[in-house]
Image (cartoon, rainbow, N blue to C red; front, side):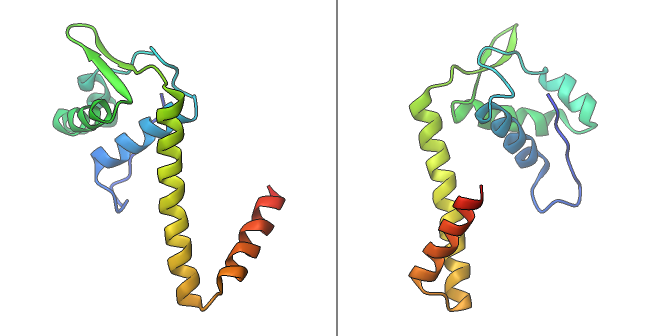
Length: 124
């Protein structure tokens, strides 16, 4: 598992850890049932507080991405396809909302924005 944190990022350290682990789960880099590093081990590797890694793991567990077994550690939760689809749709809505806000600031019409999206989509 690769996690890179930045002290100059606008996000807190636990948010960076949370986002990177979540993204690795959603894109399939981390497979269901795969063990995660221990909270203490990850904190040591990243040279950060155990409290910081603990908060990231706690939030990941709360949101259903991982589960913990006392005495054994934390593991990637079973991937519920509908759950993952819903999470991806939520993320897409957030990005589209930002894109609409920016297009409004630029004075773009809905049709111009849709044309831009089509152009980008066709180029993929």
